[in-house]
Length: 332
Ligand SMILES: NC(=O)c1ccc[n+]([C@@H]2O[C@H](COP(=O)([O-])OP(=O)(O)OC[C@H]3O[C@@H](n4cnc5c(N)ncnc54)[C@H](O)[C@@H]3O)[C@@H](O)[C@H]2O)c1
Image (tube, rainbow, N blue to C red; front, side, top):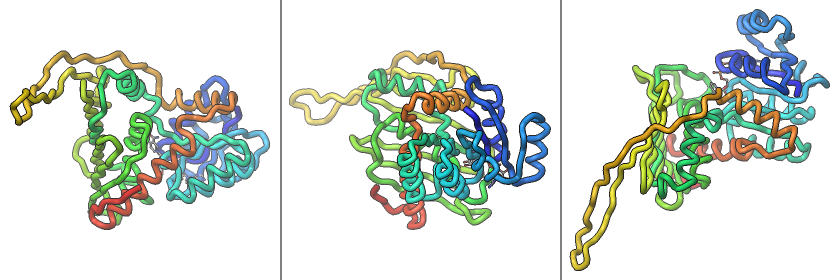
């Protein structure tokens, strides 16, 4: 598979590093409009042509797939031109700036029999794979809630607010774990510095009483990446910043019973063991790019296809509507 990568800013070098060494992939060219970033790419990959014009890659007959690692507002145009020129597309999260754009890209890909993969990197981490197994094999019991704190100082994005920047990680994880769309969304937040919300809170109501909350913040003095996942039988604490033992499973919970003839409910707290399951240690992005090559070669629909990207964009759109009305309930 011959690749062209557009965008060599913060995240682009990670994609390029993996593509340059991945079996089955051949990095043919990089496009970057910023001259400083272009020089960095040239220095790191002297054998790879680096151009300022993305259309050199999109129009090249040698390139099979285009990887788009540019700001969100540019995703739609670049992806559309790439698909129209017969290229498979791997595009960064969030997929597009709105759902109409996402739907159009999905239709073009369908018509031209091309693959779209949206970089929902966390789905390929050992932690999310393990949590998914624990949930779907019944170890956690019925899911009650998903509660995530994803805060740090910066990196400020200029074209999107903190929800569109950081929440896609949790929304794509929830989409994968819960396998249902939320019924309604509430979001609140505040703009302090550059006209975009830099602190935001999002609540999602899923079917069957599953509730989710996401706290995202660019103004936090410390970096926190902690998610609590509560089930009827067991609960998980996932601290992504821990070097070892990122995921801990607690055999703790609450049992409610009612004694016959007694009308008040009896609440019993359960306390049991905690264990830290072993997690797969591969780099998630590498695993994901290799899966992209496999999906194209085998004609397989990726779990993180355009439709998955679109579901996340729809949640973000609902959150934006709620945010602009100071937390009104928005139904999806
Ligand atoms: N999956 C993840 O974990 C993850 C992490 C960080 C960023 N991202 C996503 O990656 C994308 C880029 O984010 P970033 O932080 O690297 O941004 P960035 O601003 O650091 O880098 C983007 C680069 O794209 C270049 N660019 C813009 N338009 C271009 C064009 N038409 N042709 C060629 N180059 C162009 C810019 O000059 C810049 O160097 C965003 O969608 C972001 O959400 C994903």
